[in-house]
Structures are given as structure tokens and as C-alpha cells.
Length: 423
Image (tube, rainbow, N blue to C red; front, side, top):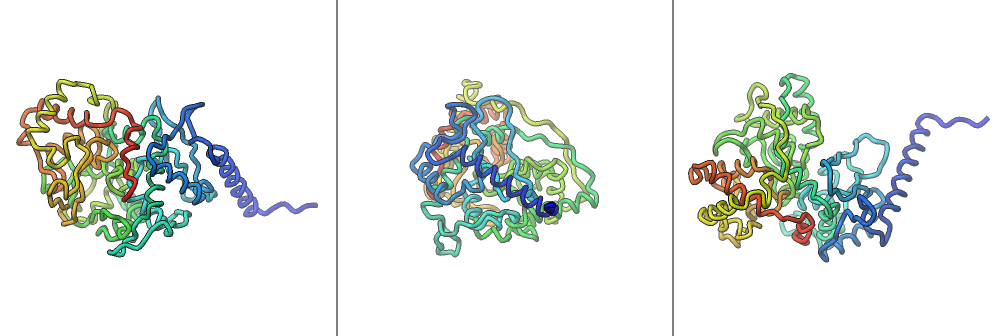
């Protein structure tokens, strides 16, 4: 009689079969010369609009990224958003996550660091580094070469022929779950989650000196200092627990390397908030304090064209308050050199350019009407002042927020043409 394979052998065979099936399916979905995966016949998921994006697709193929990554997710034009979740770290397959909706999920800075040293950002990653796409910089930090820049431009275009799901995600004020009791079990869970997801950038001591920090152009925040740019409290006051929960949920969009942890269970997000607070003497206190609230309204509310008269009044306020001096006439942001400003974080870290208000994913504190109102009234860090005193009337505040929302692109695919092709 033939011997039956042992249980470990069965598991290895099953894992190999799954890997092969996904690989072959990925080849069928994205073979040489075939269009990007789509949500329907003749409906492309990705439109490559710039030379950098098209060149990046060639780099993607040459580097054999399709051996581990699929592009199954198609363009989303209707229906509710169903954001992708990362693969289980203990799964049997070596296949990487699907990249069909990767465009605008993370910042260029995060992608460069991940290409250079994947395990520095994701300790469970099985992806090999692509250090041959980088050159040593004068300060010791690796500098992306042209092919790395084009590859990132291509990834930032993936899945954006229909709605930009990450822009729509950031246009909603996130739901705030009621916090659980801050007991020993929650603290232990926070320790584990922080070590897995946060310490690589923010450091084991919360000082912003993790192993990946040297790969990032914008240094990770020091939690020990307890100073935060995006909050609902006046300058100089500590953020609320809700502010921290919101930041963990939304991340920094494409404006910083901070990922969004929307996919974590609310209890896990609260565990991370509790852990982050423990690093700062100013925030270290008893438990968790927040008022539960549902998610914000439809992204279309208050959007372009919703109230032209109100937005017109906001345009006059934009001009009178001198907002264009920092953000430019179109609101796309200016560099320090263009603005003639010496912007810096409270820690003294230079802020290279002002925010791009034309792109929901570039707004690090969120792109909802509530997020914009917080930024206008309370300021952002030490670079942007608070305008509460200059806007004492509720209608003027709503008008300025309506104008800011009107600055965004009407067509999601248009954002692809502005994605930077070089670092």
C-alpha cells in the first residue's frame, strides 16, 4: 500500500497549490500586453496617464512583481466602499497582497522605504528589497533612482480609473467607537500591536527613532514629546483621545508615511491609543475618554458645486486672509522656497511644503468638512496659525470650508496626472 503523506507534508502541498493557483490567476489577469484588471468588460481599473506611470509598469514587469502580487481589484464606479484588508501574517501562502487598489493608499515616502527595506516597515514581509533601484545619498539616506520613482508612480495609479476609494475614505469623518475599559488586557494588547505595527518607525521608546526612521524623508513623530498637529484642542493643549483614535484610523494619506489602520478592530485601535499615550507624561493618565459617534455623512455633502454661493463667499475670504501666500492660488501647495517661508514642526524639523488642498488624500488630518474646520479654526502645528478670531461668524467658517472643498478635482483620474514622477 502507498503511504499517506504526513500532515506537515499535506500542509506544504496545499500551500504550494494555493501559491501556484494565485500565481497562474495573476498571470491570466495581468499578462504581458493585457490591460489592467477591470470591474467589467471594457472598463479598465487603471489609466496610465504620464510617461512615468507607463515606464513604471515596465519596471513592475521586469522586476517580476507579478510573481507575488495580483491586480484583481477592479475600478469601483458605484456602490459602497469596501476597503481592502492586509493579508493575514500567519497565512500559509508566500503571495503578497493584491495591489489593485494601491493607488493613493500610502505615500511615496512609504513606498520608497518599503522598496528599499520591506522588513523595516513590515516585519512579517516576505518581499525582497530592491536596493539596486536606489543610490546612496549625501546624508546616508538612500535616494530613489529614476526607475524606483517610476515604479512608485505606477503603483500610485493602480485602481484609479473609477472612483479614488482612498479619497472617498478620507472625505468621511471616521466613526468613533466607545472606548473599552483601560485594563491590563487592553494594555498588553496595545504593547503587542505597537511592537508589530508602530515601533519600526516610531521606535520602541516612542521617540521617533525606529529602524525605518532613517529611510523616511519626513521623520516619524515622537510620541514622548506629546505634540500633535491634527487635533480638536487649542494650540498648546494636548489632543483628545478621540483625536488620537482618528489619526490611527485615517493615517497620513499620501502626505506622510503613517499608514491607515482602519482595518483594525475598534478595540485594537483603542489599545494603540492607550499605548501611545503612555509614552508622554502630558498624556499619561488613567483611562480612555471619548464620546462614540457614527461615521460622517456622504462624501458628496458640501463637495464641489454643492453650494456655489457659499463657496464664492469662501473664495473672497481665502483672498482676504492671504491663504494663497502659503498654499498658492490654486491651493496645490508651495515649497518653502516658493513661499519664502521657514516652516518647521515644533521639534524644529523643516516642513518642505504647504499642504495640497486640491487632493483629499494629501490632507493628512482628513478631508471631511469637520477636519477642514478643525484645521482652519485651530491651526496645524506651528506652521499654520489658527483663524478662529478672524472668522467669528459660523457662516463665514462654513463658507471657507465650502471653498476649500471646491478646490478638489472633479474627476478622480485627473489626480493621476499630478502624481510626482520624481522624489
